[in-house]
Figure 1 (cartoon, rainbow, N blue to C red):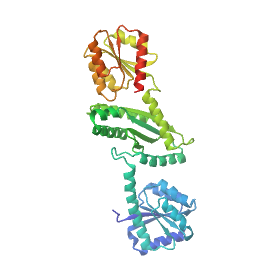
Figure 2: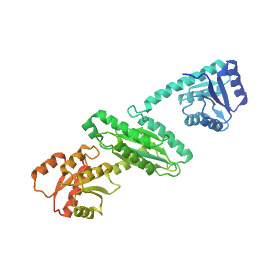
Figure 3: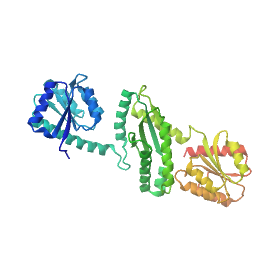
Length: 418
C-alpha cells in the first residue's frame, strides 16, 4: 500500500533543472511529497545511507559520475530504493539502457509536468514493491526460510563487490549435514525436512543477521561472512558447533544432528568468483568430513584399565584415543564427538557390547562408523548377533597389537569407500 507522505531524493547538480522539478510538484499539489536534494552522487549516497528515502530521482550526468555508471553505482548501494532516471533529450537512449538494467522509469527533463512526475514516483514505488516480492519468492528457500542458491549468489556477489571497494576480509563457510539419507530412510522425509529446518535454526542463531546464509542444495548450506576486527572464521565455526551441541542436548529428536564444515578466506587483493570460493570451501569441508586434516579418532570401551592404557600406547602416535570404562560412558562420548571407529568390549560392566552397538547404529550420526568388538569368548552366537547389528570386525583377546592396528586401519578405509 502506498504511504500518504513520501520522501523523494533528487540527485541533480543543475539548480535550474532542480527548481523546475520543485515547481512541477508544487503545481500538481505535491504537498504529500517531501523533496530533498543532493548535487553530487557521493552526497546522495551518503543521504540514502541514513535511510527514510522512498524514491530517488537521478540525473545521470553529475560532477562526480557520468552515464550509466551513475545508475549502476546508485542501484548497487541501495537496491531497496526505486530509482527514476532523469535525462536530457540527447541522453534518452542512455535512460532506456538504465531502465533495462533496473531503473523503474525515466523522465526527459523539459518534457515532464507535475502530474507526470507524481505519477512516475507512485508507479515506481508500486512496481518496485511488486518486483521485490517476486524476487523474494525467487531468492528464498521455501523449506528453511533461508536464501536459496540463486539468492545466495545474488547477494553474495554484492558482498564481494563491497569487499573489493573497501578491502574488508570475507570468509565463506560450507556446511554439509551428515547422515541425511539415514534420517530420511529411518524416520521418513517429513523428519528429514524437519532436520534441515533445525540446521537452518542452528545457523541463524550462531551467525549474525548481516551474514548471508543459504541452503544451496539438498543438505548443503553456505554462509558468507564479512569479518571484523581480524576475527578468524574459525570463531564462527566454533560458534556453529556450540549451538549445534546445545540444540542436540535440548531437542527431542530420535537422532542427533551432525555437520561437516569447511571455511575459506577471501582475499580482496587476490579476487576470485563466488563459485570458486564455494568450490574451495566445499573441498575443505570434504577433507574435514573424510578426516584428512586431523588424526583419526578412536573410542575404546573396556572395563579393564590395563587394556585401556595398552590401547592408548598402541594407537597414541597415529590416532586420537578416547577411552570409556562402561557402555553408558561410551555412548555419552559418542554423542559428544565424531569418531572414526569404535573398539568395544563384548562385556561391559553395565551392559553388553552388542547393546552399545545397537544404540550406536540407531543414531544417524554414527550409523556408518565402523565398529570392532573385542571378545575373549569362543561364542559363535555373539559373533552372529554382532554381525546382524552391523559390527565390522571381531578381535579376540589377547590380541596381537600389530594385527589390531591393521584391522582398525582396514575398517576405516572400508568405511570411507561405502
